[in-house]
Length: 91
Image (cartoon, rainbow, N blue to C red):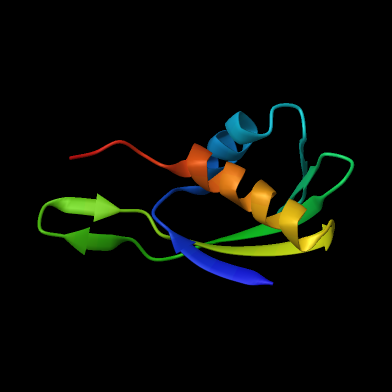
């Protein structure tokens, strides 16, 4: 099981996940499931308190990822695909 803290709202996270895995995301209650037939993961989202830095307020989200199927290599590949879709521009 992996745990992460991300700067996103639950809606932003769901939108990014849907972009990474079009047609493969199913929401059941508070759990999001991504299943491509070979590898599957279940994701739980828990909103946290916002982080304030000067005049900027960032949403915080606790993300728990549990892989339920797939080889280690397939799991890493799915996670990398998700991470790429979640990146934001800046600078």
